[in-house]
Amino acid sequence: MRHRNYGKQLGRNHHERQILLKNLLLSFLTYGKIKSTPAKITSVRPLVTKSIRNILTRDRLTSSRFLGRFINSRSTIKTILDQFTASYTDGVRPQLAIVKIHRRVGDNAIISELSLNPALKPLSIVEVVKTDKKSAKKADKKTEKKAAPVKVEKKVVKKAPKAEAKL
Image 1 (cartoon, rainbow, N blue to C red):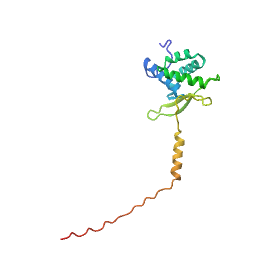
Image 2: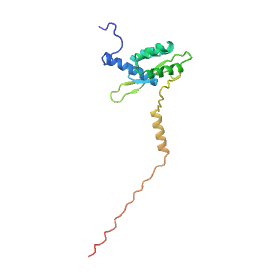
Image 3: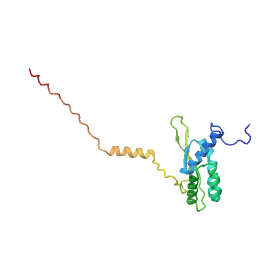
Image 4: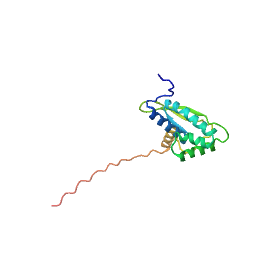
């Protein structure tokens, strides 16, 4: 029986699952978004919303103690608290969005992205430059078409007859 057991098992035992959720939470709070399977995203979403709500509504000491349960580095906790309090001072709470991106090569699993609502201010704890692969490929194809084709000329060199050996 599953009395009082909540959440998905994700094919892991209790300790592995806790570490997985802690790592996903740390990645989200650091980068502002995470990419994973829908099962993992839905498992970590309540933890992320609770963490964000705690950071924005509680005082700094309570928030840092709450985050200390999941994050071991004090400097990382300080950076996260500074960034969130600076970004969301006007009382607007960030909304989370789950978007299905693509299927993973190999096992064909659906990959989803959990991110902050793009209409709101994004986090910038770590600057991540993302280039769209499709637009990059299109740009490469356009530059290839514009470049003039190079003609390769093959020259046939005839070998001269060997000089006769002197006697």
